[in-house]
Image 1 (cartoon, rainbow, N blue to C red):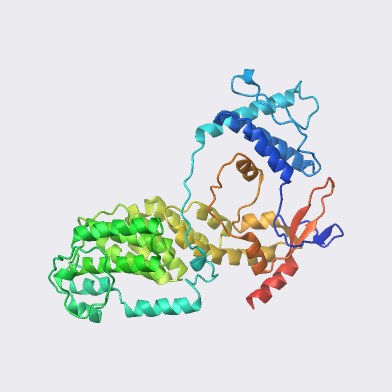
Image 2: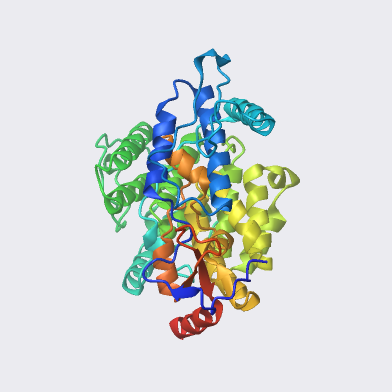
Length: 473
């Protein structure tokens, strides 16, 4: 348990503006950077990292992080005659010239750990995070503020899903009811002759003219160009989305349900996810499921979108559609890593197993985090209430951060920063903002051993519960 600590004792004081846990001394951060500057290759860097970790953890246990003068401490040394393994001289030990047997064992353990890490280390690529706050901010998973949501719903009703309309009038295609616009779609495919790439989406008011419809090769080329414009931020999403709607309209008019159609819909769906445009994403993935049923169409990305659909039904609390989705899956689908992950997420949400959920969140494949971040906020709100009711009178801030899926500043993060490595975590949630918004009350308990350490940040459970009740009132 992490609830002990006696937040109301004489050693506690009210926290000012900080609601975080451990803060590293600036001189220690500079010391770590200087130590890594000695390294000339990856093996030496791994050795220095293991040595520093052992040193800092020891100083933490002894409450000497803040009392130690890191500016004058000697750096861990890598002797040139050690065959690449290095020789470590502890700055906390005055007899560094003649290491003890314990130090030698520690050195050998650090070398083995460094070599093992160097063999298994891989570089993770960072994912683009565009406009996450617009959709994920709300605890109940609202897409935007009320005004934008009303406007989006109005547009959604006005521009009914064209794909569903053509599906009901095209042989071999299942879909929803026929929209009024669809009476202008011929039951026979039209072959477009327009070679102009850019074309806005316009609601059909008459039978389409082939000279205004773009053929497949133009649609494919324009979709690729739109993707490039999106990647370099050459145009805003509203314009790009409008262009993709026109592309889809031209494909529906020409009854194009082939491999190129699948790829364009998949691309459009992923971009809609990145932009948190759930209205467009829902229409795209609905039609895409029908395209996957065509015998000659590619299905290599089908399970990716099935996983997205599971997340979508969870967000909207649509248990009926979710049950249908799971019931329609084949055994092969359920073996796919993305689908298996989505089903595990569904299970953790049903059980409110927040510990497992945040572990799954970090492992989310493909672009699932675009949807998972909405579920994350909902789970986080539930978890906070559970923890505050379970732990009394206080709970350490770092413990609460870990339980709620926030990144905690630990020794490894300090060493990565000192080594100049990029943070591979894409969870850029603002803990300070969340703590303030949720009314979390923090006190600081002075360390028993003194030594100048800032003390342990603790959450006052009773005061935080009272503030949380007022916030949700």
